Every structure is written in structure tokens, then in C-alpha cells.
Length: 291
Image 1 (cartoon, rainbow, N blue to C red):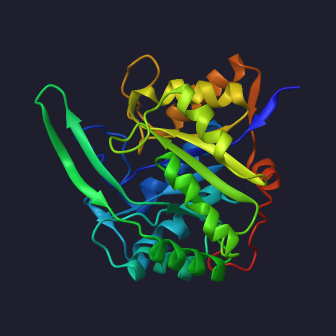
Image 2: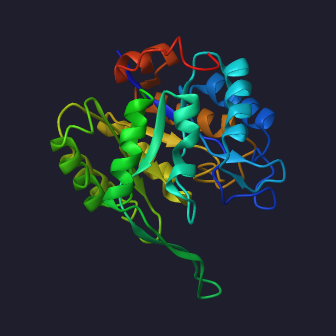
């Protein structure tokens, strides 16, 4: 019987824009429509950053509220995972939409790191900054997520970030089942290789679920590695604009379709939304705002 694996779709991010890929959604309705396409193709979790209508990042509650309403109208019982990542934004503004909207899950960066994009052709760095996430901020975000009954999806860009969870587990602030994302291929973080993924997975505690998030064109190799290891994975236009054959993707749905094709070649099937909730022990929050 084929194994059931969970596909997350990262719909938009904050950096990619329509000059790079015409399929990047900006408005709440566009994000919801891309979410619908991803679900119909086989995704069960939507990872979402808010955008302004002109494509610039948005961090205010009202922007997330519009997205929340639109996604729930078009995507039903899908598992919603909102971002809390940001550079130079006060910690209260990075988490206030989680407190207000109480999504199923929220991304939580588990450590600080250098972050840059390097151009080999031009031999220079772009988007060169330090992404600061000290323990005091991580602890604050976890406390707010616990108050909102929101599952933290721990985004780990390197092996040390995995270990950063251990004192928070010891304090009782992080509670099982734990949710780890191995983000691989970002300059400043761990390179995207199968060997590194195997090492990462060996570091996580029991009572934990994991997914791999490959950044850039190596994403598809990491998807294949995750499938063969029985792990979950994320695809979508936030992480990679290209299909396995090198063509530009037209939509998040197309990204998920190609992932499902790969799964079926390797005797796996995408978990439905209901199956994903059962696997992750993530009940539907019937009384959450805007349900």
C-alpha cells in the first residue's frame, strides 16, 4: 500500500516578484486562488506570507485577516500555516496576526543566521543581512503560539537550530508532537544534500514530524530524498520558481502536480487534508475566529 506523505505549498514568500515569475500571487484573492490550485493538486498545508496589493510584504493583522477569509472561503478545511519571519520588524508585529487569527500552525525560525543571495555571474552578494532570532524572541513567540493553540512549525536552517529546540522542550514551552522543517539550500544555512538531510533527521527527538524545504533548483532532489525516507516536504513559488525539467512554473498548483508525479513513481501518495490532520494530531479548530 502506498505511503501517505504530507505536501505543504509555500504560495508567495516575500522576495519573489512577478518580474521573476508571473505566477506569484499578491492579493488575498490571488493567494486564495493559488491555495485552491495547490490543494486540488494534492497539498494539504498552505504556508502563507501576506503581501500588499503591489507585491510588497505586509505584516499587519488586517492584511492577514483578508487572506484568512479568502483562503477559508475557497479552500475549506485546509491546514493554514502563517509566517512569523521578518527582518527589522518588532517582535509584537511578527506575531500579532497569530494571536488574532489563531491559525492551525505558524512558522517559527529557530535561530539567527547570515542570509544572502550570491550571484556567481556578477560575483557579488544581494539581500545581505543577519536574520536575528535570539532565544528570548523564540521563547516569546512560542508563548504567544501556545496561547493561540497554534502548532509551531520550527524552521531550522542548520543543525544548530535543531538543537535550539532542546532547552525549550526541557522548559515545557515546546510540547509534543513537535514539527520540524529542514530548510536547506539558503546561503548562510546548511547545503541541500541527501547526506545533510539524513544527518538532520537523526538529530530530532521522538514524537516529532519533519519535512524538508529545499530552496532553489535543488528542491526537487530534496523532494525525492524525502519521499524515499518517508518524510514530508514543501514545494511552491516561495522556494523555487522552476519545475524539474527547468521550465518556469505557471502556478503553485503546477509545482504540487510535479511533486505528486514524483511521489507516484516512488510508490507514495499525497495525504488528504483530513489524513494530514490525523497524522499530525492537528484537530480542526471549529471555534477559531473566521472558521
